[in-house]
Length: 395
Length: 142
Image (cartoon, rainbow over all chains, first blue to last red; front, side, top):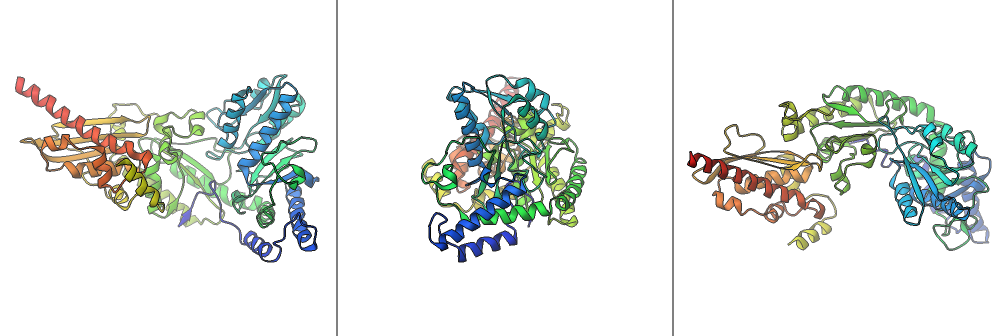
């Protein structure tokens, strides 16, 4: 099996698993309990908080709030900024057209509550333009939220520049860094980030754990009400084993970040140049400003779900932005946002490779994708019409 | 019927598709083109992600041969394949009666949101038969 869907989730690292098991076995106390056994768990929790804070470039661990994952962190960041905005008569939020649904659906909810939402164009290369952020900011802008790296096409946004503009204009800036953290260097101070969302299972940590970074002074709105955990900003007994394992995984990922990126980029670029040889195919998103492990293509004349199922038969796990894989009629909003028309957006393939992939496996992926695309085109009426000149090629 | 199919799929939460769907997807029957087809039907559109094209060779009101081409997901390919099997060698009048439910049932059910694939298969066959009837009428008039 070749697992090429690391953008969906990753395998837990051995060190993270060991941390998790040891906390579960030896320190199962409740961090809110007063006795020493509980306080030991509290210590583990605060150590993890310190670790995470340091790794993302802040000296203040109080700025880290542990959550159930990236979606919860996105929700809390946006709802908090909206609450602050509402108080000050600022009812405008800026984001991008291809954010994760955890952001877009939260914004839709706020729209119903009277907020005005501006979704910035991400252009054909899948990149937000800082100058367009600047132009979009108004006196009543409460928040700018732009993802660090896109989850489907992997394009890395000019976060530092956008952050600088927001600082200058005195507007809160949030970034969904779920795909980026542990894979790209991130420093909330240098990158001018006010709030950041992260999820452990994207960097070889466990599922169901994540965190929100919120700069000191930003009043947070609770998404989950209850006890006084997380300084009253997120109720519920902390997932101590998961949180500790997340800190272990992040530490590991950050320690080998450059080394991993180099390996992944080599494989990524080989995949891109080889898949580009398939006629009437196109890479989605900028080739350079993209996550080291992300490859995303559209192949004209075929549909993505059948491509995925046949790759699965060959032992390759990948993903697609086809409508059929989502259960809706529309293909991926990300591909539509970069200007791919429905007809070709259905035929997309995302390969998100991991550090442990070998040269041989990369070559096997290439030959398999080529074979399956050719096979499916062989009985596609769309491909027949394209080849016969009845309809013009798009790609 | 749909209720039953849905129930079966909910129970079978191990996989998206039944074994039969996967079999017809992996080894589609009657794939290709009939060069001298006397009935051709194409339904669906690329925008929605599904197109089916059916080629029929009808002689003496019997479907002597049928082939298909499909652009679409696993269940679209499997539905086309199954539909061709269900009408091959049958009288045209029988083929006209083929329903999407019969196609889905023969595949041991389809996920609820994939039922439209079986509808497309039914429509593609009907459209090919109508094409045959139209050209047969024309020939008779001449």
